[in-house]
Length: 311
Image (cartoon, rainbow, N blue to C red; front, side, top):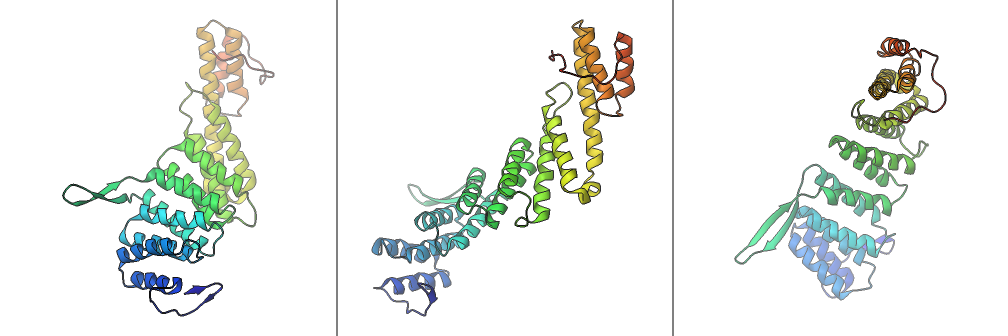
């Protein structure tokens, strides 16, 4: 048992904080998890200022996890971390919190015992929202730590896998702000966050009929990735993605030009036809856009200045 900075052997007997904590540990070892939790509650009532309350709360969390009651375990770890924010057992409990969040995101439900009129019922509820909150709390409680890094990355990965790309990009961006590329951050993980953020933003682009801001943002992100990780460009297909983005931006400008034509604004239409033809290099739309600009009588070099406001 922990006694200050040392571990000593203590008899498991009632009447002292050392002995009662040993009884909790004994119950946990014997898989008497209900008994362990009950003893923890009694310990905290009997010893309201003892430093071993940190150990007791953590052991209650372990017991509830062993029973499969992950949300109840989380509540015990929160009590411990709130009461001992810089305690010796912080990392161990935060790791358990990470395990709980991962389990919830993997599909494990909350489990609750509900007393009915005639019986004790087991209720299972989804815990996705709680998992995200737990991960954010880990990052807040241990800023700059490896656990915080894993927690933020897990949030981004979850949203990405669920195809919630806007939130995924936000989570990866937050990760990159807190863990910029440095010797402290694993190279591969930082690169992965940057690449996934770029892909997440790119995926939010719908079509030429909609706002092209995601295309512009994604292009900048992929170019930054190419500059930051030149050795990965080929394997990750960055050049092909940039070519695809150029084609889609040219298509978006071509679509705007057509809108201006329908509004009988040939100069504005020509501006966007020329932009589609000249601004993005050689694309699938270059020849077609050049022909349309020439048809309108406004063929010119790459446009300069501010474009006409889009209709």
